[in-house]
Image (cartoon, rainbow, N blue to C red; front, side, top):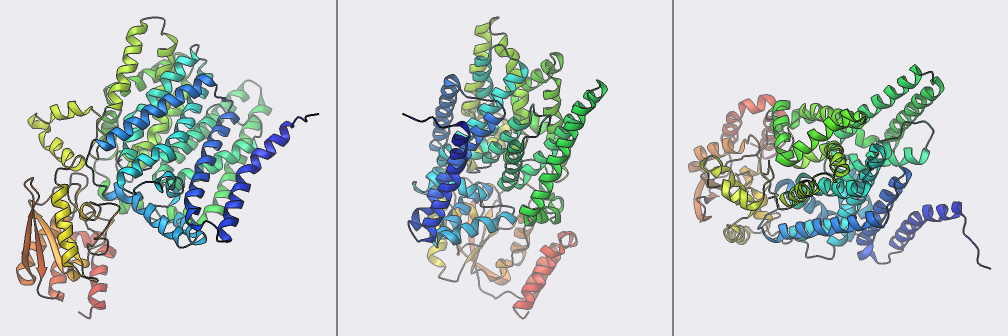
Amino acid sequence: MPTTETRPRRRLRKALLFPLTLALLCAAAVAGLAAEAFFPLLSLWAGALLFTLTLAAGRRAGVQFETFHWTVLAGAYLLLAICLCLAVDSRTFIYIWDYGNYLQLQYTAEAAFAAGPLQGLWHLVSSFTQDYTSFICLFTEFPFCLTGHTGDSYVKSMAVSVLPSLLAALGAVVCKAGQMLQVQNQQGFFLMGLTLSACWPFVRLAAALGQPDWLGLVFALIILVLTLDYRFDAPDPARWVGLFFATMALMLTRRWYLYFILAYYAVYAVTVAAGAAGLARHRQGRRAADRIRGLVTFGAGSVAAAIVLFWPVLQHLISYSYAQRFAAYNVGGLGLELYSQAWRLGPLYLPLALAGAVWAFRHGAGAMAGQALGTLALSLVLFTRVQNMGSHQTLLLAPGYILLFLLGAAPLADSLARRAPLKIGLWLFTLAFSLSARLSPLTTVTLPEPLVTALGRLPVFAQFVQLDTLTYDREDLAQIQALSAWVDSHCATGEFAYMIPHSMTYCPDTFKNASLPDRPLEDKLAFGFGILGTQSFPTQLFEAKYVITADPFPWCYEVSSVAAKLNDQFLALQDAYFVPETVFDMGNGTRFTIYRRITPATRAEAEAYLAAFAAEDAQYPDLFSQVIQAWLAQKGL
C-alpha cells in the first residue's frame, strides 16, 4: 500500500534540500570536479535559494500565492523584462563610475573562482568588510556567465538573477497589505498594487544602468512582509531567524541600506511598544508583557548574533567616517532632498502616495501609514546627515513608498464599480508613462523619451538635456575608442597615461570601458581624481608618460569636482615639463590634447600642486600632503 508522507517529514526534507545541495557542490569543488562550473552553479543555487526563501517568508506571514497571483506575477515579469531589454538595446551607454563598478567586481570574482573554488569562496567572504562587497556577485553570476560579458548583457542578466525574487517578495507584501487593509477587491488590489509598485521607475533605474542594488530590495521587502502585522504575541523562532538573516543580507548588499534598517526597526519598535501600552491600558497586561519580552528578546538576540557573526563588518561601519569622506555629495541637506524626492515620485506617484496616506488615516489604517511615513522621515534625516541621495540610493526609501502606493491602490481597487473606465485608464496611463521613462544617469524626474526630447528644445532645459543625452546615448563612441587605441599603442608594458577630466561626460572609465569586456587600458590609464574627501591626490600624474586633458574642460554635474583645479595647475606648469603630442576631436565641441612628459617630475612641481590644494589639504591632510610627501620620500626627492 502507498504510504503518506507526514507533514513534519515533508518540512524536514525541504529544510535539508538546499544545505545538502550546497554540501554536495562544495564537496565536488574540494574534489576538483567541475571547477570552471562551480561559480555559476553556486550562483544558480543561491538564486534558487533566495526565491524559495522569499516564498517561505510569505507563507510564514500567512501569504499563499494562487493561480491568479502567479499569472499576474508572470505577466509583470515579462513586461518588465521586455522593457528592460528594449531600453538597453535602444541606447549607446558606457558603464563608468558606479555604473561599471559591479561589472568590474563580477570580473574580479570570476577570476578568483577561476583560480579555484576555495579561493573564490574566500574572495567573496573577505570582501564583506569592504564598502563594495562581492555579495551581489554571488547572485548575478548566473546567467551572466552565459553571455558575452558586456555591460548590456550584465543588465539583461539581472532580469533572470534578481527580478523573479524581487517580484515574489513584492507580491507577498501586496498580499499581506491587502489582508491587513481588508480590501474587498483582493484581485484588483493585487493587480494594481503590484504593477504600480513594480513599474515605479526608480525601482528599475539603477539596474538599467548596471547597478544591481535592487537585489537589496528583495531583503527589505522580506523584512516588511515578516513584520507588517507581527507584534510578538507568541515566540516565532523561524520568523526571527528569517528577519535576522534578511537584515544582514540587506546590509551586505549595499552599506547605505543600513539607514533603512535603522529607521524601520526604530519605527517598528515604537509601533510594537505603543500597541503593548494600549493593551496594558485595556487590562491585558500579560499580553502586553509578552509583546515587550518578545521584542527585547529578538532585538538583543539579533544584536548579539550580529556582533558574533559580523563583527568585522560592524567594526568597519562604526569606525569609518562616512559623513566626512562623502561630504562632497552633501549638496543641499534635508531641504534639497525633500525637493528631489518629490520630483522622483513625479506627477503620478506623488498624488498616489499622498492620497494613500490620507485614505489610511481616515479609514483605520493609520498604523501602516504611520509606519511608512515614519520610516521615510527617519531614513531621510539619517541619510542626509552624511550626503544627499543619488537615484540608486532612493531604493532605500522604496519600501516606505511602496506601502504608500498600496494604500493608494486600496480605495482605487475597491471603488472600481464607480467610474471604472476612468480609474482603469489612470492605472494603465501610469504604467505606460512609467515604463516608457528615460532611465539615464541624470534622471531626476522620469519622463518618456519623446517628452525629454521636446524639453531639450527649450532654452531653460537645453544644457541639461544635452549633457544627459551625451552620457546616456553617446554619439562619440568611435572617437573614444580611437583615443583609447592610441594610448594602448603608445604605452608599452609598465608605461601609462593619466587623464585629468573626471566627470560624467569624460573620465578614465569612459575610455577604459568603451569596449567591454576588453579592457586594453586596464594598466595603461590611471584611476582618476575628482571627489574631495574620497579620492587621494593622484601622484600618478608625476609618473605618467602622457597626461590627457580636454578643452573645454568637461563640467562635472554630479558633485563639486577638484579635477578642474588640478587641470588649471597642470596647464600652468605644463610648458616646463610636457609637450603636446596629439589632439583628438570628439565631434561634439570637446577636443582632447595628449601631452608627453619630457622632464622628470621634481620636488618643485609636486610642491606647486600641494600649494594649489592648500585649502583641501587643511581639511584632508591624509589625502593630500601626506600622500605627496610620501611619494617624494619614496622617489628620493
